Amino acid sequence: MSTGQTFVVVGAGQAGGTAIQKLRSEGFDGRIVLVGAEPHLPYERPPLSKSYLKGEGWLSHKSLLGQQWYDEQDVEVRLEARAVTLRSSDHQVILDDGTTLDYDKILISTGSKARRLKAPGAELTGVHYLRTLEDSEALAAALDDATNVVIVGASWIGLETADAARQKGCRVIVIGPGQAPLEASMGARLGGYFAAVHRRHGVEFQLGCRVVGIEGEGKVESVIVDDGSKFLADVVIVGVGAEPESGFVEKGMLAEDGGIRVDPQMRTQAPDVFAAGDIASVANPLYGQQMRVEHWNNALMEGKIAAHSMLGQSSNFDPAPFFFTDQYDLAVEYAGRVDARTADEPIIRGDLAADRFHAFWIVDNVVVAGLHVNAWDEGIEPVQELIRSQIWVDPVDLANPAVPLTQLMRTGRP
Image (tube, rainbow, N blue to C red):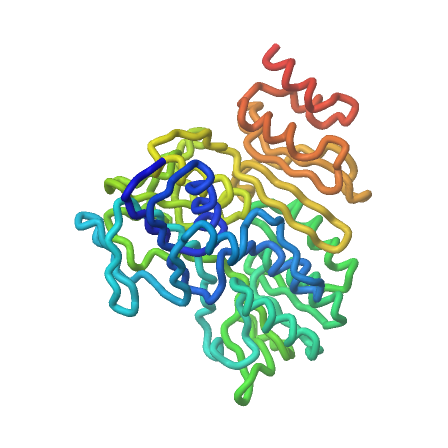
């Protein structure tokens, strides 16, 4: 595909790296400029809160290529550089060093940043966030020397880091505002299940409360919650969500969730501007709403779709979000989207006590979300198919392990 065009990719994460690889593999031989805020080429983030944090060697899914490939493919790389202004009408993006890059098409894949804790003492030494490779390395080193660890936020990141801290022998207390961890995504029953798993491994929980301050002389010494309780801490890990890195983007391009509004082909309302990954708020046709998904698999898919769109091609968009987590001896895969705080109780298929089951959330007998824990005989694929198909299911059959999930796909409404 011979062209004199310039494509700029702002954001050197999974989505941006995937898009660049796809552009070259599809034959685009024009100029590609990659702008990344970190000092690294695109890399995969799941190990940062899992294996790498626990001290294992760096292991990625090998979906992203290294320096040699970028050299061979003549990709211009500008690392430790940030976009500060997008001028979509002029087809220009301005970087923090004053450089103006002209583009024919631009992909914004700047991802998200860890939401900061708003409490006195939150800037003390010993307060950690987890987003980058350097964050993971600094936290791992701190955990090696820590005795008492307090985790602010009973989120997936919070629980994964609790696993790592316990494996390093630390006392761990998780503080969260809900009545169970993961309350928004799992609800009370499954949130309680994950709490029980962590308690079996020695994690303590302080739920229904919020952090109002962190104390220490120069570094963290204790954490105070709103009921006046105080907990000793050598290390504080904050996992209270993420915010899209969209500060340089024109306000009219943003959705209510702060991401860049795009259609399922990653196209924004501005000509020749595309967005993918954590930053993209996609008009999801299955759920009928704008959705911003902060997971590895989503960035991988959307990076490929964005590349095709930049080349004038179309791609299939999977409307059922997917993510995975590993905690202790649990392997969890989840698909779909539901606010478990307001949804009906999930249908359980299998045995929670045996740590081997599926769970399904249904609306009008249609599966909208589901997960499995160590249930690899059927896994997540039939769950995804049930979500995508929107087929009517019988809750009794759904709960019965003797009825294969694949059979439900063939049954439908009676």
